Length: 131
Image (cartoon, rainbow, N blue to C red; front, side, top):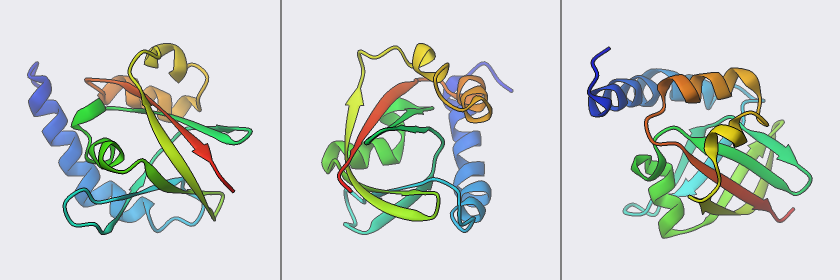
């Protein structure tokens, strides 16, 4: 792949948006983050990886503030999260001062490896679950 991180992001994002995400959203036990579209106001569902610890869910975004779901969180931090087939309401917090590489070491290995390999601007996100 090219050394142009913008090209890398565009290729990976296109694959995720048009191939991987439509399939993964349908897998019943895939973790899915639902945000509200900042322009459309419609629900936007994105398969994600991360880990729940008590009433908190942690994840690391591959592209930081360039990710559409991160932009949606900035506009409206109220989210829903499907964990183990059950939906939970929560509030998402972007944590630019948290070390995402250190955070990835505490999250599931398969997803963390992919995020490290494909990501160009990592950003930690904490979701405080309300139910």
